[in-house]
Image (cartoon, rainbow, N blue to C red; front, side, top):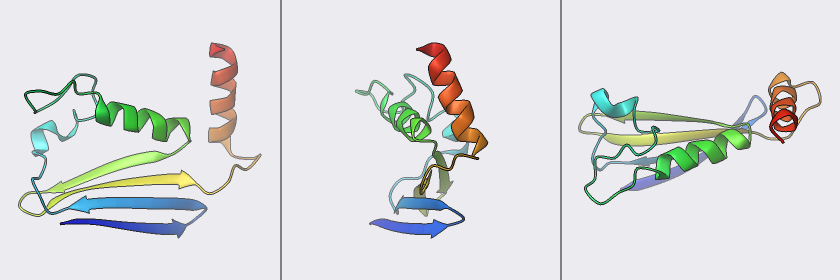
Length: 100
């Protein structure tokens, strides 16, 4: 079963997607966002890497939790609006100007 829920707290909008299917083994949990990492035979291992990149480009964060026998959940959190005094925004905009 797949469940989707949303939250709003502390200036952040959140999206949580959870399933009760296969869990992710603890020993590979830290590698699931690595380029070309996959546990599937016919996969390029780029999907979660691209998701993380898109979330990061929007000043968001992604977290994953997996409980053996219970399933896996991904939580995405994004700022509800940009604030001029947010250091993350300033750092992001500065890095974009430097890299073109």
